[in-house]
Length: 302
Image (cartoon, rainbow, N blue to C red; front, side, top):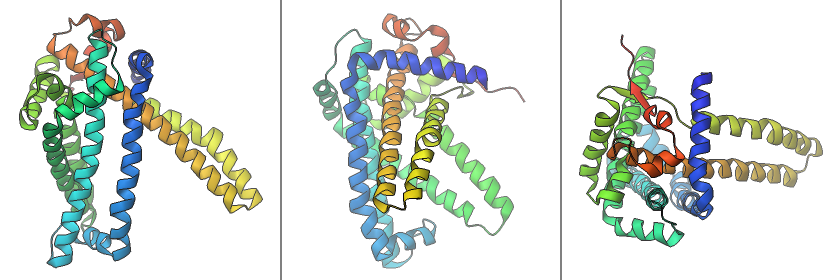
């Protein structure tokens, strides 16, 4: 655990070494977060108010009748729009990070231009990701709603493993189409091929920045959120309580935005490492070889 934490911390520092030279690139995950918030308000609140959302959840992803079909279409639209926003933002950020790793000085406009030039691929990739996301969610709901406890447990584990495998296989999709300008299907194949070529046929995630992000959010909640909430509760002021909730949302949102940028930078670095067989000088300047080569590792023998 401590070794994994140490690697994760080094990864955070290395990725930040790239980000601190172009802090303006944080505008991409920030804009994405704001856009996702408004999309949720515009789509999910009307669904909840009309009862269609409850119907979709009750159906467990199955289409039954006119309301079921409406729920299915709107839910897919919700997934598709959300994925499009996230993927567009990540494409712009990864494209800009590639410029930095190539020795250039990227701007926000550079990132936007790269994302706009790949808009067709972004929409195609968003449609694929939304479809897979809905299928996995439907399977998760089916497992959860089963009357058999064994089915619930085994089904949830299998769906989680399938989701993990999908995320692993597609980890380099965005860097692939940013640089190689290929379609979403070819990008998926290329991503899987690069991972297999560089890290082996049977690979598993080794470490990530998730543990650092979790610990930072936990520290904010315990050291800032809890005292403020207790203070607000002692006053009995609804306005004060609402203010504390808003402050916590801003702080946690800021942490999420920051780590989203770091993850995108790391994706760019992993791609450049993979295509150069570890000989990319710019990547090696920010990330030491051990850190990158240890990003994935063979599955342990059983």
